[in-house]
Length: 138
Image 1: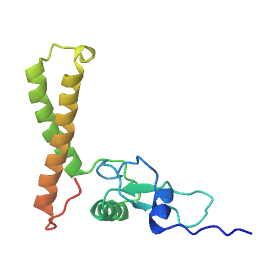
Image 2: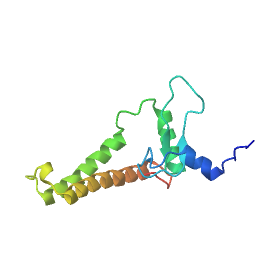
Image 3: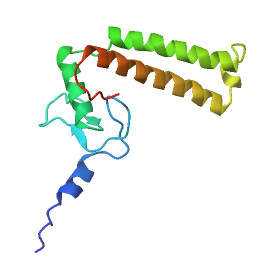
Image 4: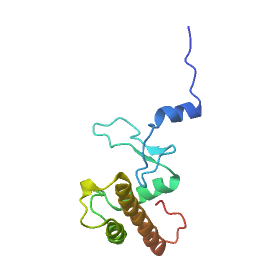
């Protein structure tokens, strides 16, 4: 009769956390922080994964404030307006007459990088102005 060998903590973590998952807050690769439904229920909520405790705390703090996180907050809308200005500057360099399908891969990458980077920078500035916490998950 053979007995199963117990898993080490590292093996248990690897089996529990899905590979190549993205953080639910900042979309960077996860590092073992997550949430799963603790018990079997008829309508389980989806599991979420995080890259750090900071992102996990931010997610749950925001989740406690509202049950449905569909609408953009005023901070997110302001960050989008700021990133639109940055994307417009990149489009000015490329040329407004160029159709999107005619852009090169590098030009599309630059536009996306400007949009995401501008949004994250604006969210950092807004969060720094509104909070005293030095750690911000963006």
